[in-house]
Length: 321
Length: 302
Image 1 (cartoon, one colour):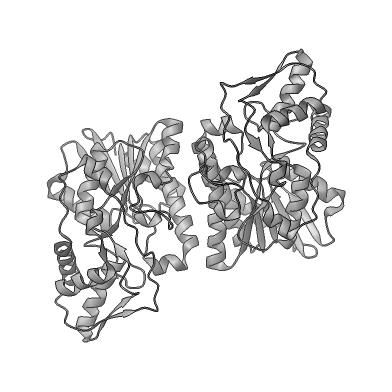
Image 2 (cartoon, one colour):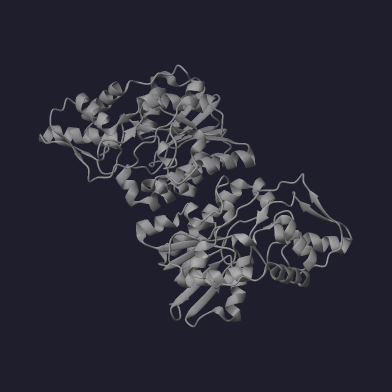
């Protein structure tokens, strides 16, 4: 691949995942600008835990910008079992991507953190300055530390070389193309899959945990638009939280009710309180985002849930599960 | 190398450094036990930032135990300039060593942290529960006993005495040596007010060997003199001046950074295990280190 056409060639790692697919859609629907050349890659193109493969990919693509979404991810129960792997694979991937980007002279890298990496013992709402203030929740310490180290590494690249490597911090993302696996996925796709199965088999919906923990959910298509804005306009090295406001936090029970309603489920809903609840809440402040974009409008939660349920039903065969 | 003779083959990475040399000396002076096969390696034997070289080393040595001391280290001013390199090279080395140890089935790994890594905004004294412990991941996922020690400021023979890049005590020793030779003043960087607990490398070496044999918690353990033995940089400079019989002027360049004001660590956990361990008195340890530097000036790292 030669010199980028126009002014930007944007390499998106993790391009086939939940957020990557959302960015692809938003760009294809018209959010791309003239002079922007978008290249979406996945594990088929390179194993990013392998330094040589990653470097070869970057040398071939020659990106001027990188959106780094690739990661080993999973829901509560998978994290609990595999903290070592979550740490090592993510640290390897992140170092390979950041350093290859640096070596090919990329002007900007936007990586992806998560509100689940913040200190477990904290005041609320959490904000961007608090990431490293204490140990993360024990359930996913491997993943959390690996993600925190992206921020450490960004600051080091800035301090030693002046690079603009930054990161965003979404809350709980959901949408089409998610991982709907009940054991390994996140709560909302897990609930959608469970309701689908409960409807087909005429059984009850069993929600894991008490239903009391609270979450802020962000629709992947909204996140995609914000990612593109960050890529173009946000130039701080300190990360930025991308989330609906605190007032839109819902309980797992309320989220389950939204799925039940969207999928027109009429069976029984029970709560298996022997299963772990995970963190009770992770309420994040989106004040920084609102300072930059006071008028950004998020898709209403119930509408976003409905669209996601419809996508899952229409794409059941090929959906990741 | 075949099966370890007797019960333990201990691989020591960073074997040529300040702490590695101290452990070598202590073992050679009789602290080794029958059945212990000690193998000291350095960067000459393998580049530990390279995964393949590290794995080859571990497959050749087949350790049952590892003391992991190798690291990219430096004093305040070098760290300020090269945070990226300090991060990347150490992460690579640590991951290569821990994972190679895991892959060859080592029973125990003791790594080396530092009190300089603790939270800046904190209550004092700092203790072990404040650490972020990734050895927990190996324990949680596989049940391995990978643990770590946390020394305070280490000094002794075979240190890096480079004034720009080294730590404060060897820096002061080198500076006094030069000031004596040239008849000039000793200029201490900073105000002299920050406080540190210093631990002599030979004392640390004895404690490392005890940890290797007897300490089986995954949570790390601070290895340090007590809080009451914390001294100011000014007092440390005075100890060097006295040990080297320097009579010139001593000034403080307050335009230079002080670094952290203090990092006072608790050695309560150590004292619970070893109530009777005796540290070499600070002035005696400083005197021995100064004498070593003067006697070995040509070949000392500087």
